[in-house]
Image 1 (cartoon, rainbow, N blue to C red):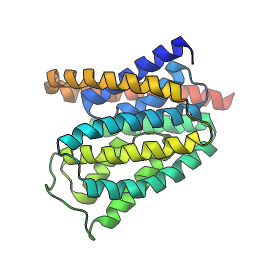
Image 2: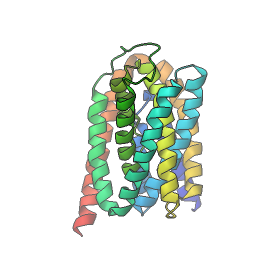
Image 3: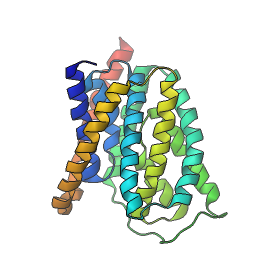
Image 4: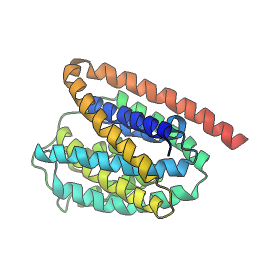
Length: 260
């Protein structure tokens, strides 16, 4: 990794972290396209493996903050993550076996789904003090496995899927679902990164600069979020529109590569 790659990785990580801090989710889906089209990682699988590790580390940093604020339901998070780790291992193994450009094409389609989800407002309703019991455990494990598969396949944190899955499975309040989701995001990301690393598909130095940028960006994004809280809905819509534009560009590039 030369100096230019290091600077571009630092800035890209900063953009992802800033978005996460500003909007509270969705930003990690930009990690792979930034690594491929801005940093210049030519191997899509290397970009996915590296971003999975970077997203996992940043998620753990966010988890620490939510844990201090008592916004994490550990029993539910552990059960969800345990089932999801199995799914992430299966999903990442399948992802490694698929042509890199085809994987990017599918990733772009997923980004459009993410953008559509961001246009929908999240409900603040839920049940405080909900527990993991016999009645909801099968749903927790089922949703955990399914989201883990998708997270591992695409090498993403998957918070935009995990948060609504936790709410659907347990009726957690939104603030606890967000905090608890970071348990799964961390576990899924580390599982995916370990699977890719076993095949030599993680650039550790690149991941380090991306993580450093992400942590700095998160601090700035969180500060900006407090000042722009009244406009968060508009910012969410603008970011979702930006994701769609990036997805269209990815569809064009990956389709051109596949047709060549």
